[in-house]
Image 1 (cartoon, rainbow, N blue to C red):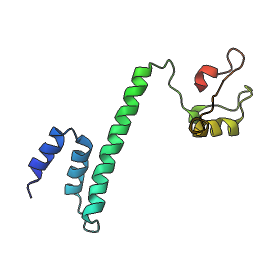
Image 2 (image 1 turned 120 degrees about the vertical axis):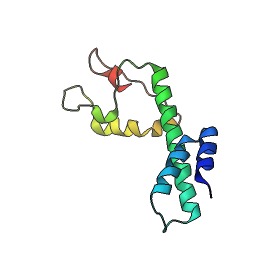
Image 3 (image 1 turned 90 degrees about the vertical axis):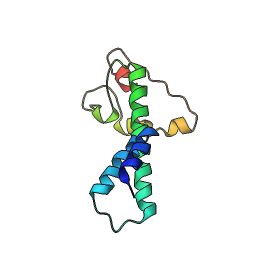
Image 4 (image 1 turned 30 degrees about the horizontal axis):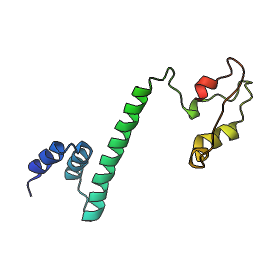
Length: 115
């Protein structure tokens, strides 16, 4: 089988994640993986690449003033944040249950950072 035309077609179809994974599979010997497993690895790579691009695009379009994440929250300061509550909210179950969330507090307590 000719691999170069396959790579060119993957790139022409804008399946760059699959093309990269295909190159890696060609360089490594994977005798223990059958066709379905290798195809699954190719598809996973493409899916994750697209999800990461989608997330990056959405973050850049949001034009957030601060870059923050839940892992960076400092619970040592006396702001009245309950770590267990914040972690529970971060899981997002309240979104799936169609509930609302209202963040209130005095100036400087970190409301914007939590958003």
